[in-house]
Length: 114
Length: 114
Image 1 (cartoon, rainbow over the protein chains, first blue to last red):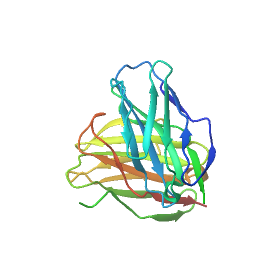
Image 2 (image 1 turned 45 degrees about the horizontal axis):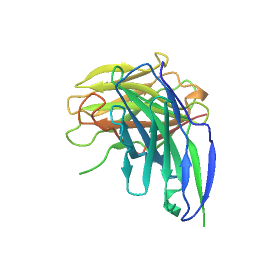
Image 3 (image 1 turned 60 degrees about the vertical axis):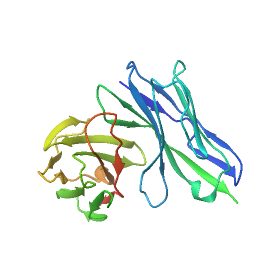
Image 4 (image 1 turned 90 degrees about the horizontal axis):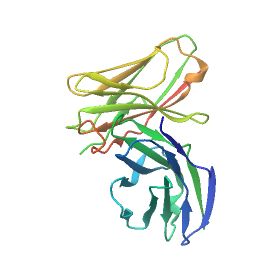
């Protein structure tokens, strides 16, 4: 079975600084997607960034980028120039081709310090 | 285009009762997935519907059921409620089935069982 592990329950970063959230996963599939979702206090889950496993190039979306290490099954999220609006729960997630339900990690609560 | 809507947003029920939650997907989306979010277990997949057929089911007891209508709207039902069913129930819709289709989440229904 596929699993997603986020080892950092909470993190804090100073506004304008850079922070990296860690995620590891386990799967025997070769075709899958990885995601980072953001869930602000309002509870609406928002997709931040996604990575196709077959792509070697790391995905980037403005201030958000990932470090995808397929062999190590690692998928970290880097947030540059942190802003107060980045404060939220961040979930790492996996979606495989065989069974396309999304499997979520437990989440990392990110605090932005002004 | 309107996002995924879920009704009601908040619900309080008593143990032993049953409850029905509703999800209206984004217009044109035919796939609807349901997730349960609790502090202890995190986000867990309940089931997925596509074209009125259940395509996938998570590891939940038979008290949890769902259906999808011809207009793609979906309902989930929980019978004989237990205290442990207290959770945020999230619905997500996508245009099609498969990992190439992004899932968009609704705001959730907060269910409290007393």
